[in-house]
Length: 410
Image 1: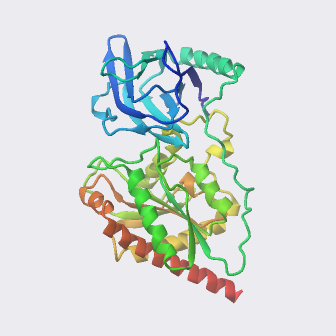
Image 2: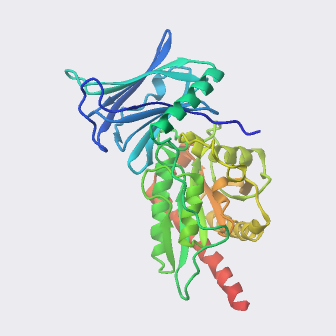
């Protein structure tokens, strides 16, 4: 039975203690500190100006989430090396236009014992302070339910992502005669979800955004393709939203770009994944599980989702699409092997949620391992990304040559 995910909406704060009302957007988070005290964990966020903020908690896994107006995070706001052991992870970024988000992963349930904003004083700017104290799961769930009811009674919004208006299943815009082929390029992760972190500290979300832009340019220069990017900035997108963007545009092909990181820093090479109910190997299954956690990483609430949305079941309507995806993946591997190092088994299969579009051939490309020094250096190179884009463009050409040839034969 699916575990219930609780939301604990603790506070909606703006002007406190004489602080002037905060603007709707703007400002900079200049530093973040997380400290262990005898009876609590204290989170302090330094600001360039007073800001409204919202704090809530999510269970399964346990997270404390802070939403702010859209802000800029300075390079100093990275407390990864100075956080208590009870804090399993920490990340921040743009959750959606107008809203920035901070997500703190905790090892057990923590109640937000206090949440307040201090005014600027002397050389110190305004600060947001949270005190987190351990609590039981039962108390957490009870406290959460009561706070949600109170928030709803006050007509405060519960913090869930807007649900994309996806077109009906198996329905896409009809292609006009002589219209360009439409390719959707999906840069994985983004915003509050950084993806893998490279050996130099570079984020996967930026590497794949750069790669998607290079590939878009490569395809458009041919004059044969129209290209849409699911994201063209550092912003979070839900997995199902990425699919909805491609389907609503009537995409003919969906290419999702990623770059993995694993404990074995010696392993390097690219790979191509297509959707399957059964993973080709344990590593492919683990990778899919991690990628499918993107929405959880971003502090999403799945308490209202149906099993049909959260599962990775494949219905019969997808079989033909899966066959086209596998055929395209084979072409990708053949073109890429002359340009980049590939894993020994380069075409793999797993249950990636982002590949679930029932009517768009879809592949997920792992461009390399950010945990490997050589791969990371290549993926930060514009020249390398252009070589990869050239190989991808040739494979896309070959695929649509085959599709159009088959269509003429019929």
